[in-house]
Image (cartoon, rainbow, N blue to C red; front, side):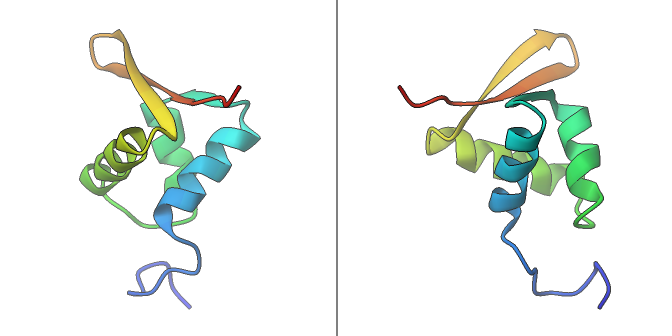
Length: 78
């Protein structure tokens, strides 16, 4: 099986959350993208859409650290 197949073994949003959990819950967008890219061959646009969906569902939060750098953090449940 190649990484360019239509069907993915795990959903992309699941992989993003698992990567964040394994790295302590917070990464820059580029660090997270590079980690996810090791699992799936995706473009940066698809990655950003996935982050937006997860943010809308209150799974994670995306903040601007400085120009061109985003910080992606898991939302901790109380």
